[in-house]
Amino acid sequence: MSPPIALGIGIVFAIFVGNPYPKQTAKVQKLLLQACVVLLGFGMDLNAVIEAGRTGFVFTVATIAGTLVLGYVVGKAMGIGTSIRHLISSGTAICGGSAIAAVGSAMKADSNAMSVALATVFVLNAVALFIFPMLGEMLGMSQEQFGIWSAIAIHDTSSVVGAASRYGMTALAIATTVKLARALWIIPLAIGTAVAFRTKGAKIAIPWFIFLFVLAAVIRTLMMQTDMTWVIVVEYFPYLISAARIGLVLTLFLIGAGLSKAALREVGAKPLVFGVILWVAISVVSLAVVLQTV
Image (cartoon, rainbow, N blue to C red; front, side, top):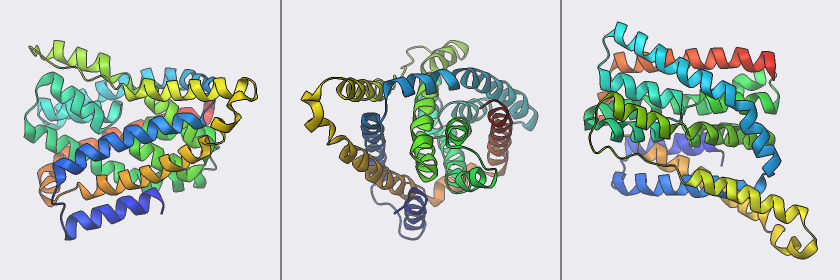
């Protein structure tokens, strides 16, 4: 089963049946996604990881800063509340729900603002998972181009990995690396948010699983470059990658099943339009740059 189909089945299940354990499945999907990302590290060469991270660094800095500035200007002009405006902008700029959760904690956002921001990003993630691979093929993008573009323009890591895995293994490797490098910016953004909003006792969430992903790539690279001692262990790496891809399908089903009619009703037209404007802007600008430079 492909990731988009899994997500679609989850959404249908949530709307027509309903998820009786939303909090429990939310925790499971988070841990499962992190575990899958770490396992994907066993299929990546450390040198390729470093190169992909270096390639996407300039794009990362420029698009994060540009999205936050654009979000402030457009959101204020549209009359979007400060909390919702900053949460959606942060989620669009870095990595969707994870960034929203971290920034929301740093600014102690109320539950309504968090729900609206998360639901807005969820809807756009679902759309991106379906249309990005099709757009990449229509535009004749190489796997390297698509990997970088999807990592920048798609919000959540789960949807980035899902879309890139449909495009090819090279795209998957690049997209995962660039997205995780991008996710590290959660830390300075959360700290900056706590300072800007003068939040006392703010908790800063550190995405430790990213470092485990890099460690997995280091282990895989060292084993491949040393003598035959590790041949038996290395032979199991493809099974770990397969497990990660299966786990990703389950993760996307759980994400889809976590959607609720109440969450969709809370979004409202204005925050959704705001989210779409930011998303289209970052998608178009990053696409133009990638096609010209990569």
